[in-house]
Image (cartoon, rainbow, N blue to C red; front, side, top):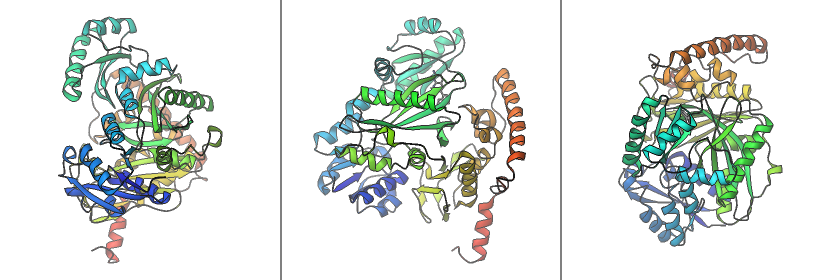
Length: 511
Ligand code: MV4
């Protein structure tokens, strides 16, 4: 096992990795930019070194400087967390050349998955179902021909894209030329690569992803699925594990597909296969994330597996300590990503000093924070300040715990997304678990808190029908369930964190 690891990241994920290292008896090295000198991850680490000015390109993205720090302080491995250098194949190879273990798959594997056309070819060869469409880089003429062959609507996607960047929906033949031109110029500007491919548009899909773990001895397992359909502008807001209404058969099929994907590329470490699931329960590979993900904690909650420790162990050459048959799902977990954003003002970032910070606690609650009372949230990095994870024996209990935990969570000095989470956690469609990736646009006004965005009339009408049915079903369920769930309504209502703040202030607890 390693003696010392450098964590090439900041915030809650750096703290998460440091915690895993501490349990494994590994010394930790943090790096920090000039605005992060007093950050939580620096306080948690055994050693810390400055890596440059605030912009990430001049600090957390300086691969060569980071490898030099690792070599100078005697760290044998680098854990990249998520974001920053975590999916940079060149950085993984730089580490390898310099004799430092990169905690993750080989650079070649990251590049293969990072390029979506190559990823689709790889998955097709491994018999993993992909969204029907093309598996080559297309000229405009080829794209037009294929769009007609596949049948509209289609998605035009950038091969270098992912996560919703460089993507265009084309519903009519007359929109095709413009869709192609826009996707191509956006891809060129964002990625310096304007290769495009086309997929059949999957209507009202759910985002279901499978967590995998693989070691250097040829073992690969899946840790079941997470449902991440509650997204706003391709940013996940709430995730749950397991997914809603995923049958054991579908789970087994998707798990086997994800393991086949991992084996096809000799994957090592933690990874995630993202799938779209349509209303017939057909599933299609979208992309593979070759890093630990923000939402890994809900999988930890339902499996008991410490994913970050596992990825460090396999990076050190140890075999996975369990087989697929050892793994099972216990209960249900939900994560709310708490962002320093103002949900009443179109989610604009809300930087500032955290004047009061009292995270939730108690049975079934986990908080992974990147901040503390007195810390400053700057505009330089991702505005996620904490993850709140609630576990329950079943989904209803997880929801009740999440509502209770959201009502306890106190953050003052900056705005947070907590009030938005409280609204989602009370919405009948969410409670029913019958949502897809359109949830926030269709039911939460796109999250804007204002007028609903213009939408297809037809879809609106269909949605209205679904909503009325859901509310009726919710009322029926609730009248049946009131005895069992007396605190379901009311706990998270109003603005309880203000009450907590006021009471605390009256007791003289606030400075
Ligand atoms: C799609 C799709 C429908 N059909 N591809 C968005 C992010 C990127 N990972 C892929 N995305 C989508 N690709 C086809 N062929 C719908 C989406 C999509 C989506 C996917 C997952 C989670 C949220 C989403 C929100 C809007 C669109």
